[in-house]
Image 1 (tube, rainbow, N blue to C red):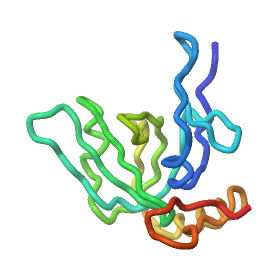
Image 2: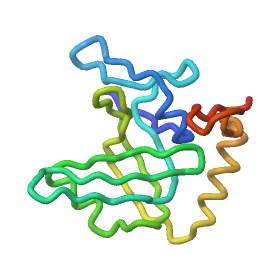
Image 3: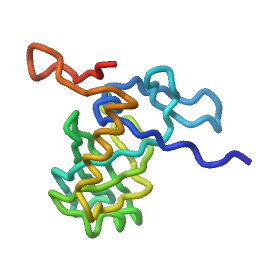
Length: 150
């Protein structure tokens, strides 16, 4: 029996700019191709910037950012309870699976945990800078993607 997939600690910019790959076999999960790694689950920390409950629909979406980019998350049906205490401005840790709709990558969260101490965001930023590189906007326009300097 295969264990749970590793949840990689990444910048949000790495997630939204990654190539989304479809699993080849019936049991092969879809994944992101990030610097040569197959990423099936992610572990990110950021601030909630938007919460959209869609009355009459079976999903709720939230948006979070970590200083490198923003990503949307969607929860469906009974998983909407994951978001019942989440508000704009909350610092949260999310473990989730990347999915793709049209050409946009989003996350389906498995765990969303409010951080009681926002200093954990600084700790994660230092950790990511050491392991993934410093995320900075490319020179020029604001519409260009953010890249890691490593």
